[in-house]
Length: 388
Image (tube, rainbow, N blue to C red; front, side, top):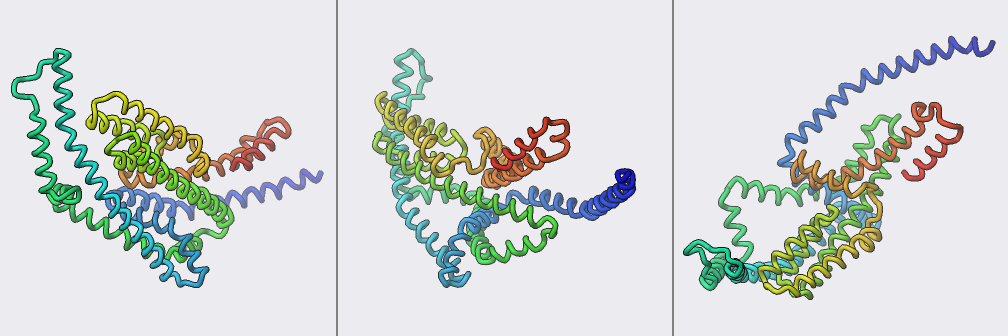
């Protein structure tokens, strides 16, 4: 009898809920359209977003340090100034140390190119490959030509400057982007807490608990991943630099920098590093023993990265399979170019958090639980919440 009496009330309640949902949907769709338009606008402006993305990333990375300085009694602006000064000094010292060494290594590499080409011609002649008349390289003449132009150019910086200055528009764009990065970083870092408070203030109150929880989880995952990945990149750079130098490779610093900088994409750093090191060693010497040392260096490096550095410093911070990481980087590059490559892993970290939350919601939904054996769906939900 009571169940019959409850039906009209239940139907009325369902009608009210349905009306509220329709009203919320009708009120929300203009904002959804505006959000889609905003992302489309960002996609169109992707070529000029690089300094802003870099600035935002640096501000995000520097905010914990500035917050700590504030707790020590400094003002926000003073804390930002201290962080900027420290970063500037470290960067300047790094450039002053690395650029002369890179210049010497590249100069030595260019000096070895003609001898390698002459050796290749000799090997071709030994196996019976005839070269066209007059195509044989004058190694000594080429070496003197390279040395003359290298000295005239005044080193790596002047050579790069000469090529860039050939295009005035590209030069101005590069300079503007370079100068914008510290400016954007300074203002974003100074106003970071105000920006976070502003975003918090525009979120609908009914969504604040869930949004706050997801934001804290994302910040924890993203911060730990970025710090760990940067440490891994630095450690790999130092390892390959020293190990390849011991192995006798003249371009050890350059190859180490290449491997370290692109090691955030699984296996890509090692593949590119092996190819670069083999070519550099082939140009430097035509003996077989150095290639054995290269194989040992990169074999140890892979074991060190896969079994020690990455599990210890990064772990499973994002929770994505290596293939998914590669796809994220390629997709970001395809959609947004260089900006997309920089944003690929942070966005992947955010998506991973959202997917874990979506999985937990799905396992708790009536659609998933309908017809499941008693207790089975509760176990699945509990496992999903532990994994999240």
